[in-house]
Image (cartoon, rainbow, N blue to C red):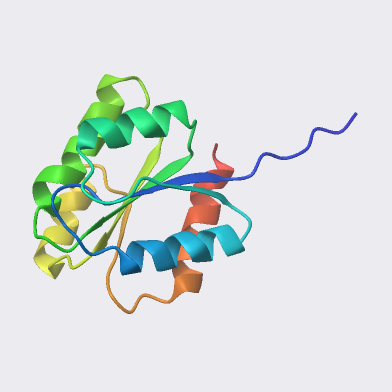
Length: 135
């Protein structure tokens, strides 16, 4: 019997106090339309809640979106908490309004990719497909 391949599972989250989620919802829909299972946690999520949801939902990747400027604190905290919980293999990606100078710092902190405004949805979908194949 041939096993049925599991869909790539992605959690999309808005950490912190940011109240704008249009971009996150557009990305979530593009990933869903590309055949992935997408869990959207909604606005104003704490890193602990994001990590708990990711583990409970058995996701392959997490997409974090921030427009508030708190990305240098919140994104690395999600990575740290995943490692602490033994789930460091979950790929974490960032998006939103991220200054170019912060991108290398985020990558050193474990964020695998950063997508800013205007990134073609196909590029984001391709990244998540590649990231999910390792799952």
